[in-house]
Length: 385
Image (cartoon, rainbow, N blue to C red; front, side, top):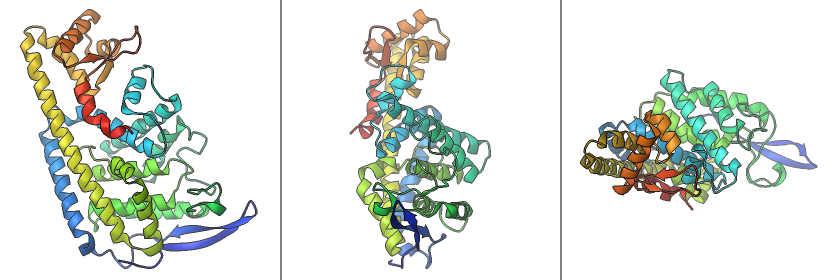
């Protein structure tokens, strides 16, 4: 449904000798209201895929939190890749194990900061803290303070003009609202976040668009905006465990994603954006469910292999359980996590290698590192290339 422009274009003062215009979005919800019939099909598909994902999460053994460790890292890699980092999941895991990585350290440090920010948001909400401007600023501070954006006011809404594309506001693709409008716009968005009349998926889609249009921070808006989707759905109880992340869908459809964002601002066709967003939810939830089922089957098959070891199966199983959480580990990490003697851990790892469960992927003679490659391969392909 085409409406008029969804904001106010405001002429701003000269910058470096040239004028530019900023875009101040209208408050949500859209007016006139969105036409439910125009995205009903994708809405039904998204809800069905969500329900199926939540069902498999409830039935997952071991505890879903074991697999959450890797899913959060997969999302961190994908979301950071959209912003131009070259770090892979393997790089991140090696970095966490203090091993050699294949990209500049600042790339993987940025991804690691994303992991910390997402974990912080989830922990705060589990403790009962509401999804609010304060929590968004806390998450943003963690996201940027140890990365390349550490000089761009981590955790603070911007007090200067930013822009998207181009080298300056005068030749930019898009110039968000002037900084003096940001507090009011974000307060309006915070209030909208707690709207109880709009279905959660629709609310998440509208909120994400508004956040990216306001662009409240000097840097890190894309990553913070994608984090906000998952945190919101978890807070609402719509997502039982944080296994749904849209970064892969946005990465694969990057040009279309930015085109849809622009289209709403210019034409007010919210329904087109909602169809795109809900398609992403449906596709992502379906893929997440498929992956979770595959992981569960792999764990069960390898647990069965270990059961054939006789008495050594007890310590081998204890070591293997650590690889279910993180599929790339050193002997030192395993000793710390299992509290077993070093020689016992080494023997268990050797047995797991003989069962074709683990393999040695060390790139140096000291600090040997081992991979549960079957598990890693179920997650890695989407994060490469």
